[in-house]
Length: 350
Image (cartoon, rainbow, N blue to C red; front, side, top):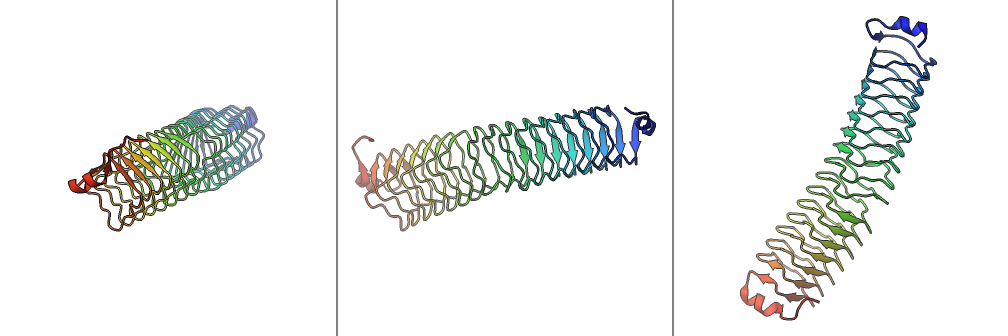
């Protein structure tokens, strides 16, 4: 650390200093309190900033590549356009900060906490976000391709136009966040929690989902065509106008879900409760539905033409205007015992 910089430190604090464009590569600022310091364009590459406390500081376009920021805290700071490639931000905290347009490829954000921050247009490709927390953050056009997002917690954040590709998102949490319109190409969504998230018009077609949670999420117009799903929960989700054509769904949960105008032609559905689900005006033609509880579901004006139902509970199903042409019933429980006896076939399930 230069003598002139030493002179700025009073009782472990630097306040109101102008260090823009300063050459501070490899400097040790660890543990310092920094108040209203201007680091705009400063070279802080390879610097040690661990446990430093930045408040109301300017770090726009600063060079923080390969810097160490363990347990560093930033409040009301601007890092817009800063370079953070390969920086170690593990356990760092950011509150009400601007990180828009930062370049932070392969940076380590594990266990970092960001609250009410902007990361719009940030390049975060290849970063490690394991156990990172994003709360009420804006991530417009933020790039996450090839980033490790396992255990990421993004709560009430805007990720609508963020870019995902080839991400491990298993056991990540996106509660109440907006991810509408996404296609999660090559992403692992095992045990991912999307409860209460906005996922309208999202493309999950052709994916394999296991234990993913969509409870109470908005999935209007989402595409689940050719999906293979096991132990996935859509309980209480809004799936209006969603597509499940040619999907294979096993041991999942659709109870109290809104399935209005869903297209589920050629679906294979098994061991999946749809209790109290609203599937009015939906299409299930040529599907196979077995071992499912559809009691109290609404199938008004739905189409189940040439569909096979085996060992299903259809007690008190609402079916005004439902199309049953060519439907095969086998061991199906009906509210009306006479109708049950008339409809059910004795042949075993094929």
